[in-house]
Image (cartoon, rainbow over all chains, first blue to last red):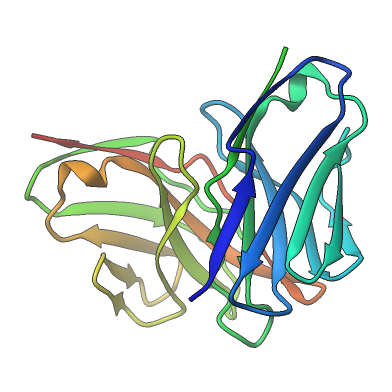
Length: 114
Length: 112
């Protein structure tokens, strides 16, 4: 079966510090991968998605970047965090077009920028 | 991508059926309707999806109107553990991948 992991589970960082959140998927190959952010009390906002290694599409201009160095690894980064980067970050995957396209979510990382 | 409209909140008595409505009047012919739920501080959990026909699984039933402009998620016997935010999503396709546009969902509270 497939599983998706995210770490860390929670993170408290000062303004201006760097960020690296990691997401990995097990039990599948060539997944499409997604990063979402959820502000407190709000819906999910799609940040980035990737259809393959090194292929990143950005949905919203912002202080964050994403990378996909391996097939089942997706990383969300920032060089300098802002207060507005606080939120709940979710990674998700699908099997890709033409296959079961249901999106499955990881447990999330709660980020607090102080 | 089609947009969905859901009531912000609903209450349901424990053991009764919970019927959660969703409007998606601009849905295209090849766009699926997906339902997820999110329990506080967890990632969204997939419930069910459909294109035209009604669907049922071990968690819920999905009723899609004939014109596909609205749908209803039915939890047949709601329990306290079904208290969550429920998202109705119409899935679009862009550049070979699928984009899920999440709204603010319906906060369902199951009452004892």
